[in-house]
Length: 134
Image 1 (cartoon, rainbow, N blue to C red):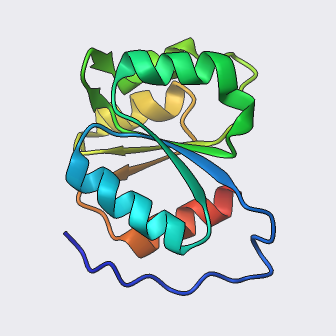
Image 2: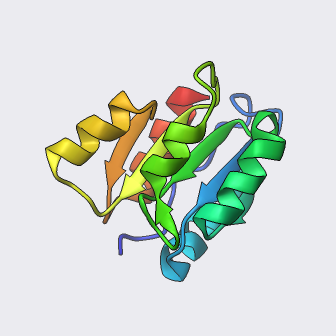
Image 3: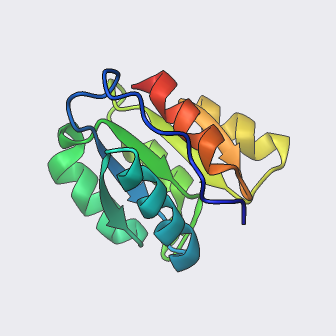
């Protein structure tokens, strides 16, 4: 895993706390992401299964400013989540996956993801990608 050193957040850029839904079943990855995101001032909610994520998104999609989505999840695939979101979904989604084959990246982007980053990843790169979408 890459170093957890992350550039200090620009205080003016993110004056209102942004809320991120992290859909990730790997404890090590979710712990790292929660640490990095909270250090940047983001509010982070965690979902570890397809069923839990589907319930949260059905009831509270509009409460989130961004979704970080793993593709390999217990009970299904992150592609299932993408396919069940409303067609007019405005919440940006970044897929974070170990699936680095181009067909998975293309499928993710065609299914509505705003960005796709492969594991392992540099936390600083992820923060930059998040800030560009918010």
